[in-house]
Image 1 (cartoon, helix red, strand yellow):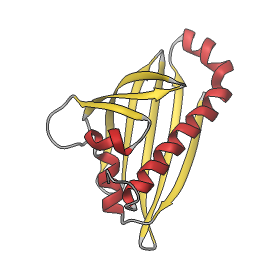
Image 2 (tube, helix red, strand yellow):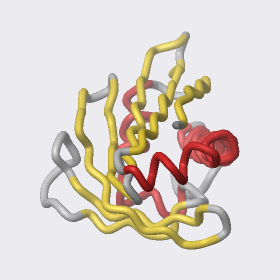
Image 3 (cartoon, one colour):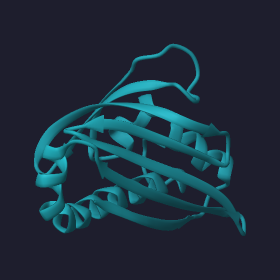
Image 4 (cartoon, one colour):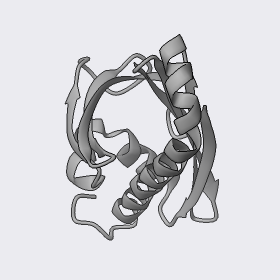
Length: 153
């Protein structure tokens, strides 16, 4: 239904960008679209870590339970969830670039139920544009935090 990738360059080292990007409890206040995060599994963030994220989507608060399904420190991670009959996966890849970081986010949404296929297919293009903007804003907020341009870095 919706698949795309976004890339940004961040003037901060990979370890800093990765740490901020995986600090789920620090996302509210750092990433403007996220209003609340509740970590559901104890211990450090890694593969299998689950959390509940509330963010403003399409003008309304939306809460989803998500899980880190892949976790390679300072290299990559994937976060996924199942919602409204569809699977959502976001893969974040971190690469050194000069003295900074090249961060790529690949987003993939696939309908799993008949209802989701029926409903999401015609809305796919519209949703893809809105989701791209949402993820780009998240990347911009992360970049500002990593580069020290926001207080909650």
